[in-house]
Image (cartoon, rainbow, N blue to C red):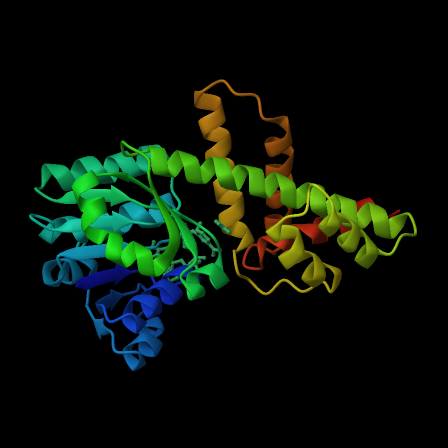
Length: 290
Ligand SMILES: NC(=O)C1=CN([C@@H]2O[C@H](COP(=O)(O)OP(=O)(O)OC[C@H]3O[C@@H](n4cnc5c(N)ncnc54)[C@H](OP(=O)(O)O)[C@@H]3O)[C@@H](O)[C@H]2O)C=CC1
Ligand SMILES: O=CC(=O)O
């Protein structure tokens, strides 16, 4: 099976390498061309534009930063739409339901097939093929690409009509971003009140609120180490899109709104390209320390 792959950031690179490792042929494209070099070493071919990739491959996956990137790669000159007739497009980026629907409608109008399939799980699960895939849209296409999803993920869900995958992903990341802020405040409170924060991590891990994120991020947060697995700017984008979904559905989300403010503050401190756990640094800013 041959796949096109657009977007070789933290996630896209790991996912495309996984496909190559499992015997899929992969033709890649990335806005910054130099990021293709490493994948060529793994056996990938390079396409000059999104349009040429789609022309060559029956199936093309995209893993792009945000709604504006996802729209640009589809609608701009040399974009996906130019050769989509009879071809299949799977957008795995985290975007809102409106963006996904716009892309879906345009692709179907040109005779193509569309599946949205955002993922839960970060850099390491992407490297290990342990993502959770939240697909929606064309069910026949979903069934066709399951062999690739089985390589990329540990479990795939088919959630019905386009938009449901995007919404599920935003709900999950809204919860994750809110939890990260509560965790960060807890670590800071422990430290400032004279407790050993390492002991806090041990206590949390033994109780009912033990979870993979606390386990993974706690030790690095205690070392002020924020090498990006999930960039903070993307977590803040997800909070913003989840809050908009809350607006649409008249759901009051004060906890998520406060978490979004903390991520915005972190971005304003220049921390957007670090891991989302760098939101912890906002609690160390001068106005919090006296
Ligand atoms: N990292 C993670 O843990 C997870 C991320 N996600 C989601 O997956 C998506 C990708 O995340 P991640 O890989 O971490 O992000 P990165 O920031 O590492 O990569 C973003 C990718 O999008 C490309 N891009 C950005 N803007 C444009 C544009 N205008 N036109 C074309 N390409 C563009 C970048 O190209 P270039 O190299 O040229 O900048 C790069 O390939 C995001 O939607 C994120 O929310 C989902 C689950 C986990
Ligand atoms: O979107 C991020 C993740 O860890 O999932």
